[in-house]
Image: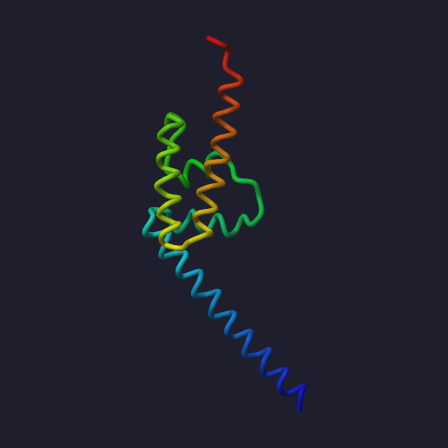
Length: 117
């Protein structure tokens, strides 16, 4: 009797968890569309898993080019970070933060590598 009850709880719990994951994924896509992040960018982020973010990916996430000044990158970062904080997408908020960190290291490297004026 206890085994049957335990099996039912596991099956029901798995169903609830699966529905919650699907709903969270749909909400992430919805929030991404609201903040201007493309579906393709989100899919690439999901596929890559724990890999290190590239400079190109960081620029795509923040919507900046190689010629963009650091101050403009910070403005874009703050806007996207706050939008995702208000809409509740922690995943996208963390991607925006990681993109800023990646570009921060690139810009610091350029500042250190350039000859003094």
